[in-house]
Image (cartoon, rainbow, N blue to C red; front, side, top):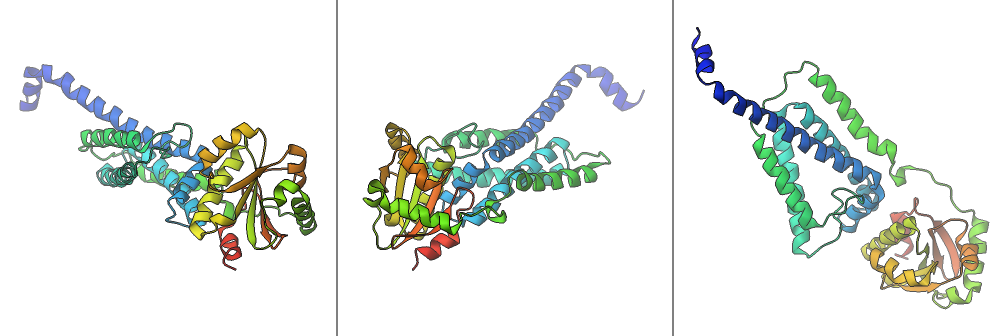
Length: 320
């Protein structure tokens, strides 16, 4: 009998423990991979909110924030898929550790700032405060430490698998939800904008809050419109970034009792606003909302809807 066989015969009681530990490591590794994949999928479902969250830090332009949001989603999905496959795990574990540490430092900074809003770690579907998400990262870090010595997979199709999931993960976010700045959206005809401008300044409620002289942005929002809320958040960040807060005017439609909730959720409590009944409101806004007008000395010069808000145009308009 070989020495190894003799050891196995004499120490059979050790085999189940080793087998259970190996199984436990496999389960933990797959679970960590699934967490990253779930995070990517939920972010993609609410990619507009995730994009606005990145933009809200005012570290990047709106266009760069849009690209960065989709890049993070791709990286998380790719990381999860490669962890499950155990592709080049000895390198992958360091990448995973670096990503977890980077996200955790950001969350810690948010906690120091007493931020309790959704950090978008799992998109809008599963809101998490920075503190909760930090504990989630700690748990993932402990799991990663537990599986640290996992060997690389020797599956002969690993390279092909990695190439496939790499292309899939990188392409899917931009195909499923292309960045707005890359798309061509229909614009409001000039005669329609001119008519909207006439109705805007002919309306007593609107004229009371919009001066005839100077440059202003007039945001027409319905209080129960999801895209209006996201547009309001985006405009609030743009106004602060380019210093035109005093030149923002908001016209609401819908239940007046919901206006304070809208303002609180979108951080727009500081802006001058008014309210209009539906018929007059849509006579100016057009058939859909949000509807955003750039007004110069009482004349409408530009119109945006949610998808074609352009940061450069706004910056140039208010730098005059």
